[in-house]
Structures are given as C-alpha cells and as structure tokens.
Image (cartoon, rainbow, N blue to C red; front, side, top):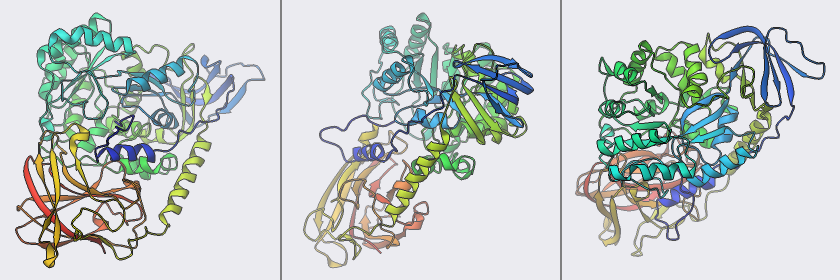
Length: 617
C-alpha cells in the first residue's frame, strides 16, 4: 500500500512510494448515463444461482423491478437488446486493498463491490461518506476492514501507515471496539511469520488471535484471517475464525483439511491470482495482452500485471491452493473470488477475470466460479441487497458478450456495467487511457538528459558520491517497508584502473523480509524517480570488487510497474568490469528509466562491496 504523505525528512526509498503516487493516473470521473428506467431484453441471465435463457430484466430507480420473459413495460422505458449476451450481477472482489483510482478501475472491469482487507482509515471513511451521500456512482462500492490486527513489527506495519498493533489478549476487545468506531465492516487479522517465504517477522500468538476473534464475534463482526502456511490456516479455523483471507502455497493440503474447515462452518477466499505471482509466475500476463481488456488498462496496470514476486527460497506453489479448492468443493465449503489487488501480478477489477479462470481450473464449474464472485460473497458478508438479479435488489449489473458458462473468459468481453442502474461511461474512460498512452509514447521520444552524452554516471574521482547527471547517489534500505536492514556509503581511495576513488557500500541485511535490501540508488532525472529517455544507450557497465558475495542491480522503469527488474553480480577480491544489457531487465529498451540501485540482500548478514566507473554504454 502507498503512504498518504511524505515525511519531512524522506528516507531515500520513500521516493519510490512518492514516485508511485505521482505516476498514478488522475481519477477519471465518468459522465454516466443517468436513465432511471430501462429494460434489458432477451439476455442469458445468470441470476447468481441459476441461468435463465432469453430473459428480460427491468431496472427502475436503481433497483431491479422485474425479471422474466417478455416483460410488459411502458413505451417510454429504454430498451437494450441483449440477444446472445449474458447478464451477470455486478461482481464482488472479496480481497483487495483500495486507494487512489482502485474503485474506478474496479468498476470499469465489472467489479461493482470491493471487500477491502486493509487500507488507510481516512480513505475508507471519506469513501463511505460519499457513498452514503449518493455519490461515486462511477466507482465500485466499498466495504472495508480498515486497519488490520497484527503484532508490533508484523505484516501490515511495513506500508508507511501508522497502525495500532496488539501484544496481548487483554488488548483485544478495546482494539476491536476502536476499529468498529472507525467504521470497519469486519475484522481482518494477520497470522504470518513470513516463514512460508523464507523470512521471519513477529506475528500474533494463538492466545491473542483467539481473543481478537472472540472480541469481533462479541460485537457481531466477522473475523477474517490472513495466513502464510497450512499450519496457520488450520490453527485459525480451529480458533473460531469465520474465514481465510488466503489459501496457502507452502504444502499440499492434508487429507482432512477441508473437512476441518467445513466442520467449523468457515469460508475461504483463495486469492489464486496473488498466490500464482508468489509462486513466480506473473498471474496477470495474459490479462495485459487480452484485446478485450488491454484498451482499458493504464501503463502502470500493464506493468504490474506482468510482474511476479521475487523468487523465494522456499519455492511456494499455487497448485497446492488449487488442490485445496478441489477438497473444499467436495465438502461444500463456501469459496469466494478475491484477488488481493494491487499486489504484483494483479490490478483492481481486471484481475477478477483471471481469478475466475483459475477457480475453474481448480475444479469449479463456470457457474460455481461466477457464484463465487456474486451470490456467495454477498451472502457470507451479509450484503443482502446485491450479488443476485432479483426484484428489489440493487441494479449492479454486468453485460458481457457470449456465454461464460461455456467459456469463463467471456466475462472479459464487457458490453456495459451499471451501478445502481447508472451505466459507466467505459468509452470515455478508454479514450482517456489511450490519450495517456500516446502522451507517454511522446515522452519516450524526448531527448536524453543533458550531461548523459558520454554515458558516464560516476567515477567518484572528485571524492564525493555525485553523478555527472541526474541525482547523486543516496542510501536506500528496506526500512521504508518495515525492514531493519542498514546501510552505509562512503568514497574510498584506490578505484578501478588506478582511479583515485571508488564508492564503498556496506551494511547488514536483517533478513526479516523475504525481499530485504540495503544499498545505494541513483536516478537519471532531476528528481528521484523522474523517468527519462536513455534509449540511446544499450547497457549499464561498472567495475565491482568486494567480499565475494553476490549482489544485485535493480532497475525501475515507468512502464515496469511497482517492482524493479534485477540482475545479480559477484563482487570478488579484485576489480572486475561488469556489463548488463538493458534488455536483461525485463526487456526494457531504456526509454523510461526511473532509478538504478546497487544493493545487498535478500539473504541475511553483513556485506561490503565497492563500485566504480558506473556508466551507460
């Protein structure tokens, strides 16, 4: 998640969060069709439970007035011919993290309700206030956990948002009551020590977990729990949690796992899309190139969809989660579609279509998968006014071409989306995306920055960590993400090839995060993370020496999304020249380079290496 403000004295990696805020597209406010009454004729209707062939749906004043064949309506009611198309209830994504443009993007792709599992409380409160006032009809409806329950230093504390944590069972009721007072619709709890991903960090103990669950139930709230391992999942179900916010990818499901879930009447939000990315495959890759979806995706969306998480030493595998879903189906455990957007490999709205595809691959029928994104979450979260197409319910609707009961990817071919009977202006949104891409392409043709002609970035011979163009070198550590790694840089004597000086980079990697880092960063623009066109150059070269360990070069690009591309190098006892082509960094051509980092990690321990004669060639 993104920090909502810049600290007065910004740690260097904080510029990354700031860059993401600046690079996000402006919120596009659709000029929606405000017709109060219309009828959709001869559609194939999936009403959340069953399929009705050649049916009509009459909408009036934001609600469904009638469903049936050959409905008799007055002549002034607008008619929409949907022959051959399929009408669905507005989709619900049961695990997201919303801020910025998230709710707009969600609705564009047919998600009319997001069940947020942790966001900034002020954002949650403002959005809910606007919804209550009848505003935001071009945004997905928001339900939210607000702040999550976690231990001091636990998962959820790394995002730059100051949150209250729990250390003991006696704090649980007051903590839950404070969340309800803030407006939380349900309680989200974290039980995850990062061991599933080769890390370690604090997490709630069993007694505190149980106390938070009991405190939520005392106030009539659902308790939904984030887990990392199968062991954690079993423990939280036996502790009385209402549902899992994720499935696990650390091991094959035990033969009785689903029976335990069923016996406790719990539900599961598998989040297969994010588990696929955790397993090393960019879950959103196919979405980013699908012609039914791509015209509505921003460059940032596309970059993030093509990303996966860094490779973890523990080798998690999303297929374990798919095996678990087959078990859950057999014993009738409610399965809910959720994406955990906007993690690497995902994006708001669009990723629900990959989640549906993966649910079908896991053994659900297309109709069951669609229920997992409509009627099932509506029932589980007691949203009784939506998730089905029936008289009296909200007119949150999605019309798609073709038949998703035969091909689940037909949900990607969206004709129209309505929230409370108001149609989203997808055509204007698409036009705004196209304009932004054209402007970005124009920027990519801009002249390279002054001073970059020779390609030399730094030789450090003036005795400082300055650069010939762009910013000087600055420290960057994982402290911005809640890590405890430390770093130091200093100019030292005796550089490569008899030069006067070199830059020494040293520190200690804590290893508490599976993606821990510490090192130095340089940006080619006048400010950190301002992308510039360096496409006249083809590679990064530098000399390195050090303690014999393996280190990383990270490259951020504007089109590459939120996760940097990386390559490794060995720093031996003697100076060695290393050259890495731009193309090795996820195929970039250098037209939008935003930052280059030299870092240690993610393995824990001390490190010390030097770089010199850093240049672009």
